[in-house]
Length: 106
Length: 125
Image (tube, rainbow over all chains, first blue to last red; front, side):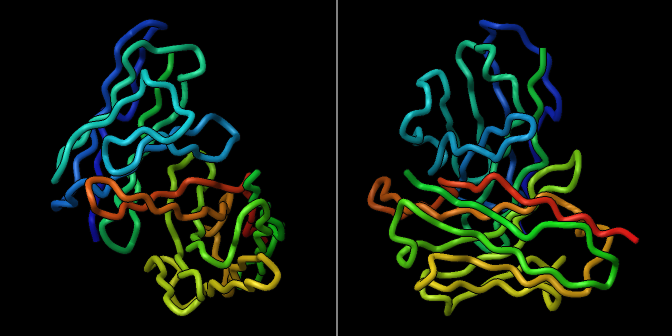
């Protein structure tokens, strides 16, 4: 199974900050990676797929990069509604594993 | 509007069984692959099962293999998860999620583009 390790697990930031979350895969997955945002009590929401393609309707302050085993999610200027937990997911093979999550808090 | 609505979650005793349903609307259900994903209280997301659009290809996480069965009824626009021999560590919110396929750089890429609101399964005596 492919393991995904996110860092950091918790991130304290302020409105307007640039935030970067890393996701490392235990083996190469090309660009078969997606990022999701989950607010408390809500279902996850797709932000980015194919490592760097923004899902329709997602603000352009979100961006993704990487390939192989190293990936990043960047929020260029943190907004109040961005305080949430973020997950990466690999879609290269089954099982479709998720990272453990990164909670972005004030 | 795409809608996925899960139902069937409840309190069940260890060793018991439960069937979850996911009702789909707002899209052509029978051409989409589907998944079940769960989230234990205060924990992260765990993928547990996949089913192809025609129901022929199925995968499970090791944690549920042999106990859970995924199925679908395309005529009823519904996805199901039959859960048997339930354990305490199966306690979680269960989500159904639709698979989207997009071609990027000439290569097909999948993602889970729509999710239901989740249904809570509690396994306890």
